[in-house]
Length: 315
Image 1 (cartoon, rainbow, N blue to C red):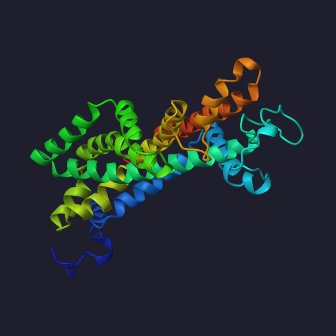
Image 2: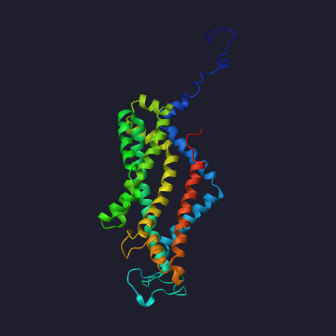
Image 3: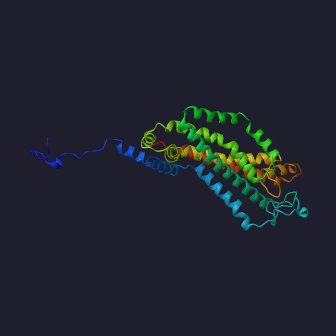
């Protein structure tokens, strides 16, 4: 019936409404859905912090300030051996005493914490970037390529990581960058498997199909659509990787394969201090042990909080 026919006013005819989901599909094809989902997820995450998560974040912030800002305010000599100051108990001039080489223990904690945190964050960044890209590409391509890429991961996981790490550290002179590279080579496997599993469930979603039909290449689909929607898994994995890397460095140092002097880390301090524990030099053992445990627990609290509150696939 024509609009101009008698008895019918043009204002009475409802405007054409888009089909349900059309706007969402269009925005998804343009890449808007992942960005909006990420924003909503981050808002939910920020509003859903529980008390333990806030404690974890506050603890990490305090430890970072202690390790990086502390040496600027509390000056100590961590290079020259002073045997005349060896094994002094806590006092006004040395709040946590000195070790067997005459180093101030409080200053040593700052120096060791800086190395530990630098290593933890460097390993987390390297493993997250490479592992996420590897897993996303494998999950998107699928088929024989995916199977071959996963067999590479399975083969590397079959070798005990700590044993391989000990062998490699014995073959080369340990330093901070070498340990970062070795830990990164061993840590990206888990990230890749988690991201691949997430991508397998995302690659059939409407926004991925729409982007592919519009001619988007695999690289754009991975970077623009898949990884933003898997950001929850990636962030959680990176948080736990920091804690694992700090523990791995402490393990190597405890076994005598850590950073060479005069560099310090908490594992070396703990290993050296155990030799004097039964002689009553408690300040050589308890401070590094406590700060190491507190740091690892703080990162785990943050990871658990993000895991519980950040789900980007909810709408």
